[in-house]
Image 1 (cartoon, helix red, strand yellow):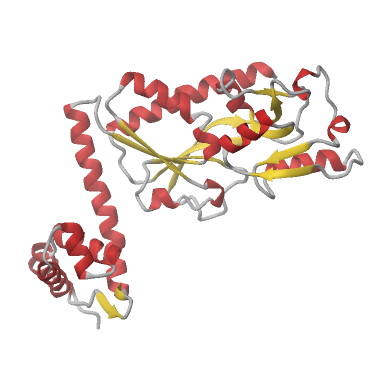
Image 2 (image 1 turned 90 degrees about the vertical axis):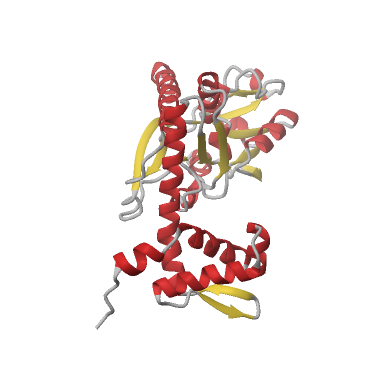
Amino acid sequence: MPRAVDWGSRIGRRLRLRDLHILFAVVQHGSMTGAGAHLNMSQSAVSQAIATLEHALDVRLLDRTRRGVQPTIYADAIMRRARVAFDELRSGVKEIEFLIDPAAGQVRIACSDMLAGGILSPAIDRFFRRYPRVAIEVIQSNAFTREFSELRERKADLVLSILSAPLEAGMADDLNIEFLFEERMCLAASARGPWARRRKVQFDDLRDADWITPFSGASAEKALFEAFSIRGLPPPRVVVRTMSGHLRNFLSVHHPFIALVPRSFLKINKDIAGLRMLPIELPMRPLPVAMITLKNRTLSGTVEQFVVCMRDVAKSIGRDEDSRR
């Protein structure tokens, strides 16, 4: 029969957060020596902390190999749960900081480069005007993978993502998904170039153009290829595929490229991007932009205030899109 774990007398009294913190450091650095140097502790003190943990849990937590120490399945299990506990404690400390001073705290956002240069920019600007001492960390994320690892690993408080397709069953069981607005992709070129000076543009006019698209297989690229195909035109010549908004903008402004660009980006950056939307519609459905957080995870007051700013900016973008129809 499985052993019954006596939580009160053995685990509850002997399992210390400090020892768990040391375990994380040992696994991260791959050795007792490396963890000790990082934590400014002696190797013997690190070893004693691990031994205390192993005694409390009555399992082996580390295997010694030629490449250093490796976590056992038991270490992986306790670290997975401990990561959640540390994250909740961190959120509690941030909540206390917010209660003491609502103008202080931290917000961590994960999003793609495309959204960082779009809706996120005015949201941070608006938030910073109200809370200038809050630290904001933006983590570059490829949310197109739809795994949202930054959330699940507690590296981010929220994720901004363009959901080009519904999430499959089971992928969102632990997620709160709030749709902010519908993004429309458009064709854009340098405001100083020949394309932007045309009052009317047809796809047939663009058969010899050089293109910049997000990535192979992206919804916008597929719509572009279909627009050419149904008109009997040869496939468009894609010269650069990139998710970098900065690279796309630089190339589009300095060369006669046509780029697939989110319409909200052009609106938000109309004075600085140097790009102009071409008078032609890309035949594709709008893409929902979502703000995603973890279920059963309490957000700090600072993060909640940032969420309010995100909603306000999204409403202004949504109103502009409605007025265009």
